[in-house]
Length: 396
Image (cartoon, helix red, strand yellow):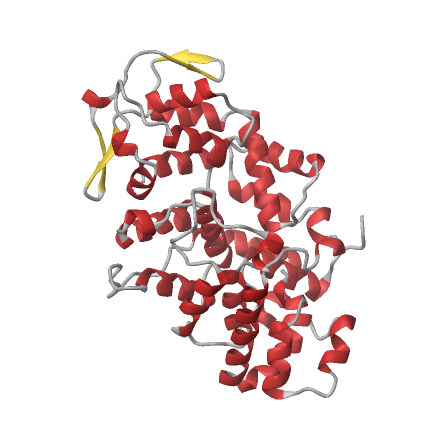
């Protein structure tokens, strides 16, 4: 294990992982709290309700993307928004198929308000979510002709992971969800379409329905391990050890799957604060651009950001498949890097005063040695652009 991050560096590291980085407005505020105080504040703010959607029309083109990006840039609850992004990638659902922005927005609100609570109720609500039902063909899942899409992805991608279920489990779980569907914007259960006979999966037998499935799956040790590993990979580092995963899985076991408790332990673990974890995760396009907007103190999300995100390969509410988006170095293609450099230049030109604070915000006042020669003698927008486009800035 390497040296431990401390002081302002630890706080900045936390905010890049549990949020989208510091802004000129909140940098001093979080640093005065210290690392433990910042952790407590982030976790306490999970209970902060999302802003009211006054005058918001989900059907206006791009409105749901714009509104969520604005919330990330000017978040009142950084971790709540970051968790919503995590769950959006985990329970990946795309409006390219749904074509109902209102339903996608309602799914985001589910992740935003429930993302830090217990996992089992979250999965129960996702299973009733109309966008998810439409996405994985729940309306086609009927007695005698079970559609296995949700039964498969629920186990492979949402709760257990590959290798922890059988084809028989898929068939039996699909039977349990027969009759679960939607009408217009509402969840409906149609008794006539439900297979009420006994099912056997994961060693249990009974006339199970969908809620029984969720209860059984989320109680399995494989589920706790799967979710613990995903939390570590998203918030800490790409290759958590079995021992690290076991610690977080044990927290989930003891707390009934409480995500807030798991993150409390994760953020304060020696592995999270190990200097080797510093700038060890590649920022997704959304994380990069939202963080850059926060770094320069932007008052909102410019419209050009949407085109930039599309060219970088990440459009909110439109993940490429049920597996979600790629991660890690896959984001740093040559074309994506060209877009990141262009974005850095545009932001630097639009916010020239950012050069006065960017060193202190992004590097805690100490520029990394590898970047010093590139920045020597540079000031104003040129310095800002070089920092945002630098290899170091692409990493959280």
